[in-house]
Image (cartoon, rainbow, N blue to C red; front, side, top):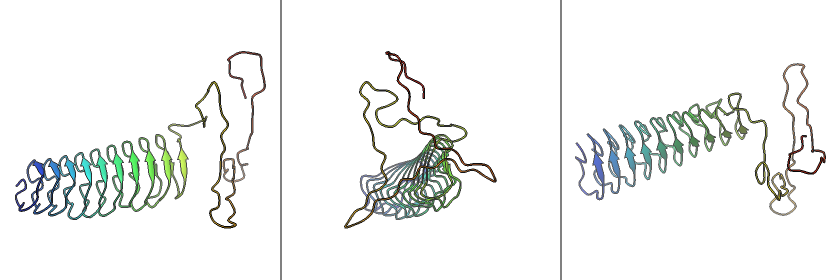
Length: 238
């Protein structure tokens, strides 16, 4: 029954069989679709659009689920956003996650993860505070936390990594500052973290070539600048 148990909840909208069916006193929620928000009894400020979206929610508040089975297993997690079929489908009690894209953060149970793109971050389970941007961007281990994977199929292999690109979508040039070219290019400074407090040393800055396997040599570090050429607008080669 739509809003069949409601006694004191106000300003709710429920469209679809069994949407908000158990609600007694929760207010200001929107449930559209079969069993959307069907288990919620007293919380509010949800938006659930799609078959079984937020269907198991009991005490979690202030979440948005758009898409079939989006946030469908969530019970007590709050302030989550899931847009796309099966986005954040199996999260139970984690909060402050954002998943946009089909099956993004599908298996996540950790808090504070952000994923944008189809299947982004769907290997992650208990890992928390990760950021995955790009189709199939992910972690290789379910418990990876506080890592960033940026690009199609970019994959973090451990916690506290920043990975850009993948074998499917390689990045060979990186430009930082004012784009690839500019009429008045300005310098930029690459910094490690500085100290905070009395007599606190700053962090070291390490530049490393790629690591080799077996008895092969590691990657070289090459610093290059372009030579001055003839007058004109053509970019010089390195």
